[in-house]
Image (cartoon, rainbow over all chains, first blue to last red; front, side):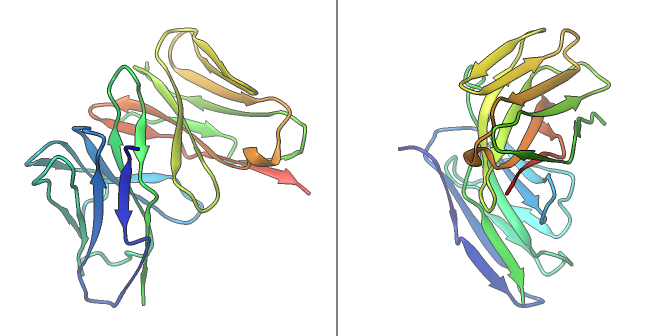
Length: 113
Length: 109
């Protein structure tokens, strides 16, 4: 079955470290997104990519970086510049217009230790 | 920028009671989407409404899109424990989704 795979499920980071969250999809979707969710809160957009080799900042891009070298992959790097990185990170892709909606991965929970 | 306001933030119901969440925008929306997020889980797409005045049903769930395409609602009839979670509305805008804050459905013990 097609879907989005995020890894790892849980990640612990020491202060000052960069970490990279993986997001892979086999849905053949063009557009991919990264969201951050804090406990009890809604979703905030970090970065999005409409097509390979192109991406745009979302509302809270500071301290994060992405790449989109392949259609299937959209990794997110949480840099040491992100002062409060502990959160639930969700990767999503946009379904075809006729179907509507976004498909989400199961998420990565990042904790700074 | 465009915003979607969603209320209430929480709703406590007895099992078997109904549940409703509402989304409103000051501007016309191209569509409205609804998602469910179970505790500890990820958002799951439920439905998309596109047409003015559209009503769609999925078993005990009824989704409505207002005539002016500025508001929407999700109504669950006779809630069950499997309905527990947070329900989000979202609207497409400039290659992004604008998200409501979500309504958490809590079943009273």
